[in-house]
Structures are given as C-alpha cells and as structure tokens.
Image 1: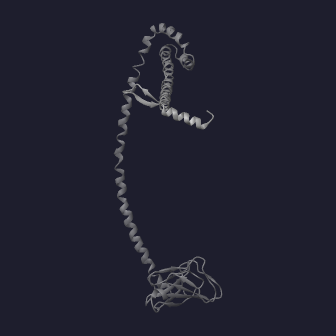
Image 2: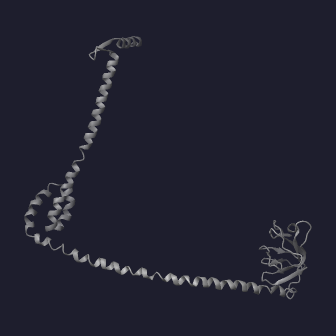
Image 3: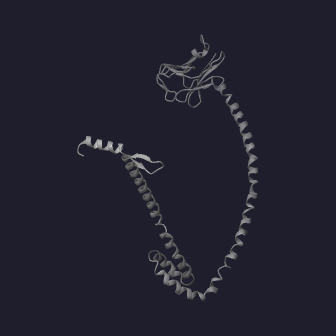
Amino acid sequence: MSDPGKFAAFLRRLRQDNTMLPIGGGLSVSWLELHAIIVFVCCAICSCCAISSYVFGSASLYPAKPASTSTPRPTRTATAAHTPTQTLTQSPATTSTPPPTVPTVPSVLATPTQPPPTATPPPPQPTPTLPPEPTSTPTHTPTPTQTPEPTATITPTPTATTTNTPQIGTSTLTNTPQPTDTPTPTPIPSDMHVAYVEYNPPGPDLDGEYVLIENQGGGSQDMTGWTLSDDNFNTYFFPVGFILDGEASVHVWTKGGDDTAADLYWGRSDAVWGNQDTAILRDNAATVIDSLSW
C-alpha cells in the first residue's frame, strides 16, 4: 500500500462493497460505514466504563472516616466516671491506634457498678443558680424613669436667644456717634488726605465713581488695615501690604478690577457715594485720619 492511488482505490472498493444486515427486510451497509459504527460504539462503551469507575471508585474512599469517629465515643463515656485524667492524655492516641482502646472498655465496665450513686448529686446544683439571675433584670428597668431630665434643658434655650438679640442693637447704637468725632483727630497725621471724590460722574455712576487719596508727606505709608467708609457704614478695606509712597496718590474705584499701585478696586455692583455724603479715612486703629463732606 505504498502507492496512494492504490490505497484510495482500496477505500473506494470498501465503500462500494455492501453487506446485508439481518435487520428488517435486510439493510444494505458498506464495509467502511460498518467499521466506523463499530469503532464509535466501542469508544462510547469505554467512556461509560471510565466514568462509572471514577464515580464509584471515588465514593469508596468516604466510608473510612465514620469508622474512625465511632471509636472515641465509648472511650469518653467509660473513662469520665472513673479516671478523667487518663482520658485527656489518651484522646490523641486513640485516633492514630484504635486497637489498644478496645481492651480498656471491658476493664472499666466492671468498675462502674460501685459509683452510680455519685452521678446523682450534680443535677441539683444547677437548679438554685437559675432563680437569682432573673431577679437582677427588674433592677435595671427603673433606670428609664430619669427621662424627664431633658425637659429642663429645653426651657433655658429660648431665654439665651432672647438675651443676645438686644445686645446686637445696643452695639449698633454705640457706633453711630463716632462720625461726630471726625473733625477732632484730623490733624494727627497731616500728610494723608481725602483729596477728591467723584460721586456723580457722567454716564453710569458705578463706572466712574472713585475717591482720590493723597500722601502729601515725604515718607511712605503702610495702609494695611486702613478703611474708607461713607455715612451709611459702607466700608472698603485697603489690601494687606499696600504702601502709598510719599508725594503719591491712589484712586479707590467703586467698581471691580485688578489692583495696582495707583488704582484700587472695591468690587461692588452698585454705586456708594450719594449727592450728600462724607468720605471718611481711618487707620488700622479705627482712628479718623481725614474726611471730606459735600
């Protein structure tokens, strides 16, 4: 069969040659199909045998475990009444070697005839311990009777809120007479002045409103914490670290913008200075340095 053509012709002959099977009136099947069916049936039988041997073979391993667990049970019951100390030491030995545990059982069975009355006293001991335990439970029940304590805390809370409200009104009244003292402290620093206020500019007031602050002295002035306010207590705070050089001036604009050495911006959305108002300049100690009224 070294020639492939001859082997192919041989396979064709096997496929063309039919045999009659005794099934019904006679089933015509080729030899090649018959061999394929026989091989498939043999493979199926072998697979079923392998699966059944695996299932029943693995299941045969489990019965060994219950045999070992049943042996330590008689050893515990027999030795507990006579010698409890020996049972604790022999418990690990019984698992490894079950045969020596068997002769110990008959030797103990003859002895327990004498100590049966000793097993009777333990039951009366747990009975007196149970009644005192429920007696402790009713003692804790009266503790929730102290709940009316929060009622006393609710009453003082409204009193504290009412007392604080008039204090806020009194503090505002004490600040109102401060503008009356403006003319007296003006000569203390004579070189810082409110030079000009543009309160009614052409066009929108917000875009053109500003206050001109001048340093008419020769030295620079640190204006950190200084304020500029009007009669209605609208207050502008000079930025931290702002220094006005000598013989220099700065515009304080009401609108928003980026601060520079010559222009500072309040950042408001509405106008501040009215037709009859006062611009008051104070230092970081709230002392009136200068004011300008119109």
